[in-house]
Length: 329
Image (cartoon, rainbow, N blue to C red; front, side, top):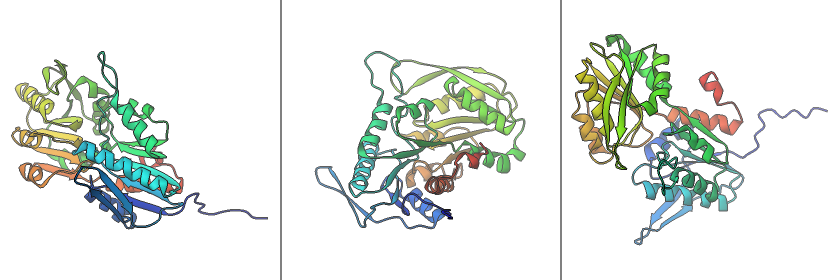
């Protein structure tokens, strides 16, 4: 009696759906997997209410919804929630929310009285909508994983930035040093430094009040006559980065490079980065950049696509294979 099932799959085929938040990324992931993006209609009524209709059945299928939750944040988040519920009501076997950039990641603790923990609320909403699993990239704080009761793949794209720097930029750098933009990023910054075999320096800054502005104060470490790679997880308005560049330059740094995962670049963030005395910016396509922002940063910007990473994780999740193997874990 041989009951050996080779290549046993619990779910039906992979069905990929892209939201309107990151259409190019969704298409690249589909291309990597050599699968089409499934048809859906997303309609916004005059009263700003969203309506979603699937163009085909997903009954019994393994469904992945690719939607980043950068600007417009609330539109993208609601669209993701409605899309998940639509799939749930059509009897999808399993629904995975693929959210390269997860909004409200900074609202992860009560660090003062009478404030919310919105990151936890977002996790609850995804589960309530019907997500069975989630995938995200480089959340601002690791504890966000604890806000979900469903399993998830919390990935990092830092190895892509490190590989790019090692292969394409390292040879032209003089005594490079990694600089963590603040002490909160120190641990991850150390990982960058270790993987690139470089020393590390830290910027110590103190925040005043609730606005996004912070005050950079002191540099811990040595940057004089060295090339500097400033690392962070996301850049929003570019305020902290501008202060970091100012501090390392005042301390005698040579060329300055920026490496970060999420190019949120809200308000005049892109223009601010463009005005800084930096040589190059290395980031990913976890959040799409408008044509205007790309133009402003032209010549200084390298965007590495996370589509291969996410595509491979989707494939492995579908086949029930280890994701850790990809990172030799």
